[in-house]
Image (cartoon, rainbow, N blue to C red; front, side, top):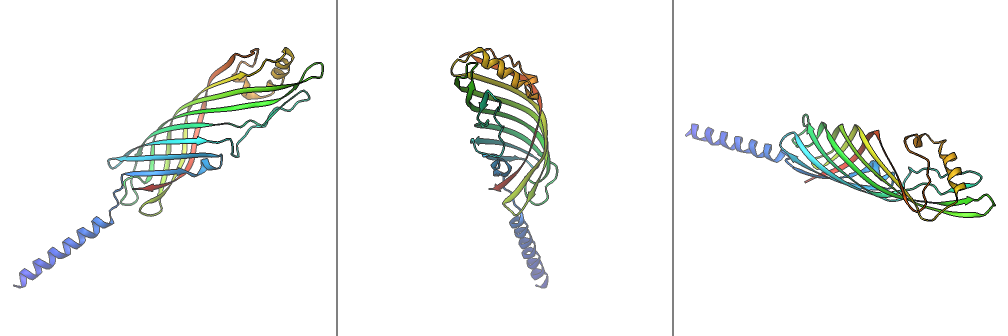
Length: 241
């Protein structure tokens, strides 16, 4: 009889231990996140991440950029040529593949990770201003610009689990190669003196060393393509479910 009670007690203790272990285990496979660092630049980026096993995960990010934000480029300011500050808006899509080295709790997607990403950005911008012609006549300037950027790269980061559902994802480094495709279209025709003055002004900017700055177009579209190194970083607040 005594042995039976001991056996029953052992079964109850074992069952309680298993139940507590099961309750403590967090096995969420999905996450949705908000990129906090992108908010500073007027961009709303949402990311969905899905776990596939103990280490592998894949994610897809979608970002929408408004013309607001801290990052903007000053317009041209010369005695004859004045333009507005350059702002831009558009969207970006970022698929990723991640490998989590070792989880820091009973959770599938946290701790140090490394992976690879593809980032495609499509932005548009308007450039408006005034040009003073040789005879002193002010002429309106209106250009439509578009930037397409596709980047491929690797990344390393750390996801810190705040609690069972919330985590902060620190993308520490994301070096890669970016393929730039710029296009700009003149909405209305301008005299030759404008392009002479424009080329002289643009020659002072190092970025245009990558482009053919001999802008001799009217209503046609001018394009420039080149490749540069790219880099990603950021902080994302995520929620597991």
